[in-house]
Amino acid sequence: MQLHFDDEAFDGQLQRTVGKCDAGMANVGECLYIASRITEGDRDSWYAAWSTFADGLVAQAAAAAQTGHATSAASLRLRAAEYYRQAFFWHRDDLDGKELTTAYRASVDAFRSALPGLLGRGRLIEGDTPGYLFAPPGSGPFPTILHIGGYDNTAEELYASVYPALDRGWAFVGLDGPGQGSVLYDRRVPQRPDWEHVVPGMFDWSQASQK
Image (cartoon, rainbow, N blue to C red; front, side, top):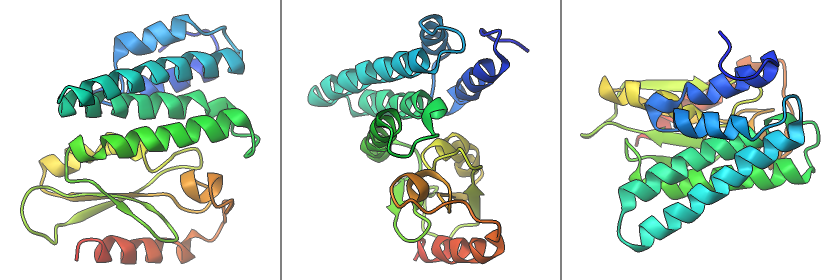
């Protein structure tokens, strides 16, 4: 189903972000407005439209936080995190490129600034495969979902799947592995074929993070 663009790749990525509306990571009206500012097939206008709108949300969030509206600030920052991620999507071919390095860092910063106001007492997990833990109310340990994205995912983007887990009393761990998110963009560790040697460590981190 076409949402806005004739270009299937552009439209698919637009739908990818719109699909996160239920999780509070996007707003349909905002996404369609951003899409209207993009020249079809032009990755530079794609970057400019998404990143400029995200910049505005970050500014609104700062104003909301200064006046004591922490929930509104977190909501604005969460959407900004997703829009910044979307901004650099077509610029992942150059790990040193300004668009990737700027928008990726802005996405992470916005998400982590939102973290205290998000569902599930989210906290950062450090290590070889970094990411985030979200847990339901109560004392754990809890049954836990370990979510690993695809090659173009980031751990921050995986927040879209957090609330269904929490609603059912499960904890949620979303991690970046080799060739993903911070492991690729910050540490320059590429994708590898033998993930059977990566996933056990992720399970260990997931278990240890609840202690």
